Length: 319
Image 1 (cartoon, rainbow, N blue to C red):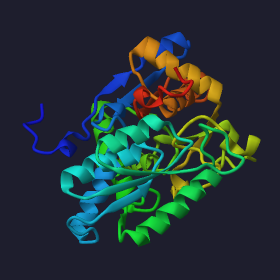
Image 2: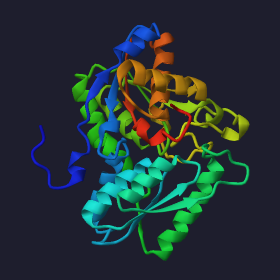
Image 3: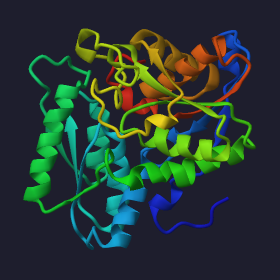
């Protein structure tokens, strides 16, 4: 048990691991799914980790000055993590977010002390579905405000500290919790930090661990497929129909596509069967694991993260 903490960000990390035995039984597959319960971080998502790592490293290098404003575009989870860390460390924080993301996240960030800028969606976008075009508009606003406010950009897509959070911490914890008995790792890609950080550490431990990228079927950019329906999908925080992340392709052993419908069903099954109340991307990871256990990874041990809390999606049709 951790000692008495002086700052809330000290509660980030060291999340539990759960074997999803009821899910594997329900879907009739052989093998194990080991799920890291990242939604139990104080900001209710795995993005608390890179938020802390980016701020700590920027402060240490002097790039982020005492009391300087921090800014970042976010679908909500990184922004929530940064709201928590920045408030505790004395940095004003500005979150720039598309109106296509669930508004629970915006309310949470504002309550945690952040200034939240909501950017209208592109003309042809669908409400609740953030496209690559929407994200470009958010990026343009973030760049503009970074200059105007003389802010430090906690750039989750480009700062190495973002992926190092998972290389140095998440993956290490996962290996310890599973006693290194891992055959495969699956991860749906947003910024790409979790996949790259964990995959690099896993392959350093055992080069035979296979690492699969998960993508929405309509926006399978890494798989090299054409966009369907302009890349629109409901899985928030990932699959932006454009290759924004800088994932090392040598770490990728394969790509798996999941549909909105199967992701929604799986997310509901996770709540009903396992008691894990999580969001879309968590369901996507488990869908991919089930696909593998039904096919070429039958009987294997698959590891993944449950990324964020279902409480952030109560305004959507997920539940």
